[in-house]
Image (cartoon, rainbow, N blue to C red; front, side, top):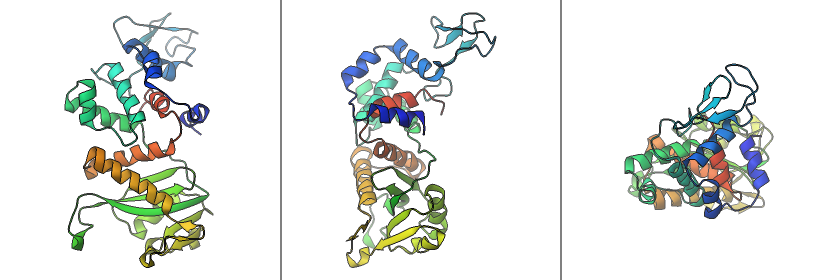
Length: 294
């Protein structure tokens, strides 16, 4: 289990208010110190001279130096802040905004809030979404599978034309994983299922043919028949994953309006992250992730 997930569990349902945020990060120096402590706070020995040391802040530069040999550590190197000329306070506030806007933050909103150019705001949004990439841990227990399509509007006869397929797996009461896929056939979906779902899991889905071989692959598989308007049969349903798709589509439509296929996965990652860290002070989680190399 990652330190970020452990931290989110310890934080629990605590709020992280704007007043708390401003008290912790009043200026760029406080932001840089926070990144340094998260990334190098446990470093007791200098990587260059090997002596036990403390690192001090170099005046006028975004780095820290060994008090014995002056070896320098750059906290922002290889992070989302690398080579940025935008103040760290603006970056941290943008990250805080992502944690409090449950339907996402558009680049135009960030442009207005921070007083930066649209190009800068768009890049900041893109970099912040890198913090929300999905983990590799497999799902288990009782899960639901489903696929959906995201994209423009077309006449009914070719309603899937140019729409982008997204496949998802959700644990009931747990985490979700979702992936932008090239197609929704068995050759594409079954390897994704096996890579992301523990054997012997209980799988609920509709009667889509791509899932028909799940039983012989080591899963307990139950279905509901949507074509006959059957949506729940006992404990078999796909309502959880349908709810996730609903939130994803409403947010993209209401906040971002349109998403290109090239960047669709990063937006999917964003809403997977929001779902998986629901109920915790996600602002602190994101700020800790921001100090890690990407």
